[in-house]
Image (cartoon, rainbow over all chains, first blue to last red; front, top):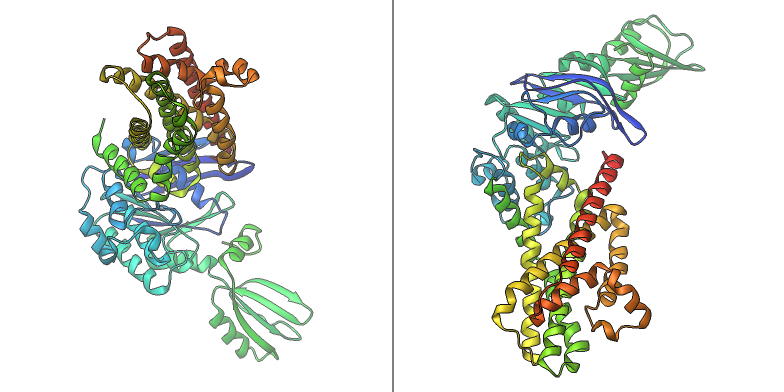
Length: 290
Length: 245
C-alpha cells in the first residue's frame, strides 16, 4: 500500500467536506476517485498530498506523514492549470519541478512525452487550454514519482487531447507507477481505472471495478406515455406523472425491447441520460440501490 | 540544506522580475525621481547631501521590501500555483528564501541607482569606510519593513492589501523623515515621528551616513518592531490558514 487514509474528517469553514472516509491506494494500481462536484474529492486529495491536515483520522503517504517534505519525494501532483507563474516558459516550469527531486528524467524527455517539445520556449500564458493541461499533467511526472496524483486531469479537454493524456497515464502505470485520479467522468474511470471509489457528500458511497460501478450508477431514463405500466425487469426507479412514466435503468436497450415485446400500448418513447450527479443523489436518497 | 530547490526558486523569481520591465524600471527609478525633484535642488553642502542620500536610499529599500515583496508575496497565497509548489518535496522556506534573495538584489539595485543619481546631482561625499555600516542599517530596516508588508497582507484580504499598503507606505516614509530632515516636519508630525518604525530606522541610517556612533536604543527599537511584526505575521498566517484550510 503506497497511500492510505483512515477514518478521516475534515471541515472547511462550515462545510463538513469529509465525514469519515477511509481509502487505500495499492502500489501499481490506477485508482479513480469518482464523484459529483462538492463530493469531497479535492479535499481528500489535498490531505494526501500534504496541503491540509485532517481534523481527525490518519493520513499516510509511503508510510510517512505527507505534511513532511521528505514523504512527498515519491509523489507527483498536477497543479490546477489556471495559475502557472507568469513570465515563465514551458521548459522553465518543468525545470523548477525537477529541481525538487533526486532522480528526475531530463526536461527534453518530459517535453517529448507530453507533446510539448515544440512549445518548450513558449510563454506559459500563451498556451491554449489544452496545452496548459498537458503541461500540468507533465509536471506530475517530472520527478519520476512512484505515485502520481491527478486531480481532474482532462476536465475541459477535447477528445483527442484527452486520449493523448490517457495514453501517457496508462504508460506510466505499465512501467510500474501508481496513479490516483479524480474525475467526474464515468467514461474516464472506465477507460483507465482498475478500481473506482465513489465519493458523495464527504463519504465513500461505494467502490468496485469500473464495470461494477457502471452497472450501479450508469443509469438511463426511459420515458413514455401508456395507460398502464407493463411488468418490466431491470427497473431501478419509477416516476409517474399522469400517464407518463419515467423508468430508471442500467440497461435501456433491454428495457425498450421488453417494453415492445410486452405488447403494451405506448407512445412518445424517449431514452435520456442520467447525469452522475443525479445518479449519485438517487443512490444517496435510497431511491435506487447501489 | 539543499541548494538545488533554492537556486531554482531564486532563478524563477529573478527571471519573472527581469521579464516584467513595466514593474522593474519604475521600482528602480521612482525613489531617484523623487529625490531629483524634491531633495537634490536644496542640497548645497556635502553634509546635507549625505544625510538626504541616506534617507532616500532607505526609502528605495522600503519601497521594494515593504510594498512589492512583503505585500506581493503574501498575496500569492491565494493562487493555485502556490498550492502546487507546496506539494513538492521541499520545505516552503526554499521558495521564501528565494524571494528574500531576489528582493535583496532588487533593493540593493534601487539604492545603487539612487547613489549614482545623488553623485551626479549633489555634492555627495561618502568615504568608502562608511559603506559597511550603511549597508547594515539598510538591510536591518529592509527586513523589518518586509515583515510589516507581509503582516499587512495576511491581515486583510488580497484585494484590500494593495490599497491599504499604499495608505500606510507614503505616510510612514514622510513622517519617519525619509524625505526631509525631521526638524522641517510639521509640529504634530515631529511629536509622533519617534514612535514610528520608519523613524527608528532613520535613526540608525543617519549615524551610519555621518560617521557618528550608533545608539543602542535605536537598534533595539528596530529589532523590537521586527520581532513584533514577525510574531504578528505568524499569528495572522495561522488565522488565515484556519479560515482557508
